[in-house]
Image (cartoon, rainbow, N blue to C red; front, top):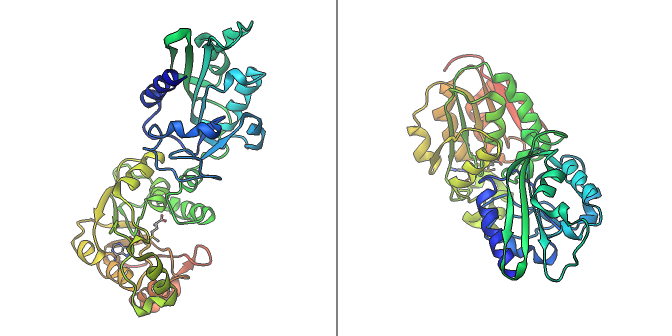
Length: 372
Ligand SMILES: C[S@@+](CC[C@H](N)C(=O)[O-])C[C@H]1O[C@@H](n2cnc3c(N)ncnc32)[C@H](O)[C@@H]1O
């Protein structure tokens, strides 16, 4: 199988879309799932239940399919499992059930192997058989045979789900599954619902403290980014060292994690926006005290401050709040959690802090009433 496996890896690399919908499941991968290493490692998708291997969220056996709810899977990869499945039609039906609309399927199987019997129903594992089994629910991206030495012949089918259940394909579910935000699913939902009311307000969207871009993608999707500037700012070197005003918890966390706390790469943000099918945002990399005063943005329609600490929040208020348009939306992610962010907000807003409204128990927002 060595040659077959290697050739399949080469095909997988070619036919799978660059940004795979998540979660990615290697069905029937078992202990051998490691062989997908290098194929999926380019995906930055975190893990679902058990971390199964680079780029794979979960390895499940065919018999566990019923445990997966409808429309939960973004990408299902099944290599050389189908020929061991007693009822291929049931298998195809289950696959279609769990993969959500626009999700991706890759199935490979062995049509001929010297150690396998002649098998009366091997036609199912031919290219036509795979097209017959999966073509009803998946638009074909690619299919073909993989001839190898010794008379071994593999076949494969790759497709995109074109109909059916779309239960959990909301932007919030996608972002939450992709592990590209520190926010809980419920907050993402609240954020999306709130921000979508600003679709008609012209102006830029600015987020200070984007980390991997999860909350930014949710807000960008909600307000619509066609013709709108999107600026996402972060050090990408992790959190700065907290001051006394940021509290003991911040100090303890920083001492434990240091500059690794929230460190990531701008590439993570681009990938998140790809997953969300949004255009590339403008990323401004660096410490806020350097980048924020120089940010060249026109009027801002939505300003999301998620820098957690006093100084990080203060500098953003000083330079960006005056650019928020009348009727613009200001969101403060950690007002109820980090004392530094709360103090900087209260100091800057003064009496206007009474107008802060709760998105949930921690996060607050305000609609600006006057220019300047
Ligand atoms: C809580 S995380 C942001 C989470 C993100 N919005 C999400 O979707 O989960 C806070 C981010 O703010 C950034 N940050 C905090 N203070 C900063 C500063 N002074 N300059 C640059 N980045 C800063 C950190 O690097 C970190 O990525």
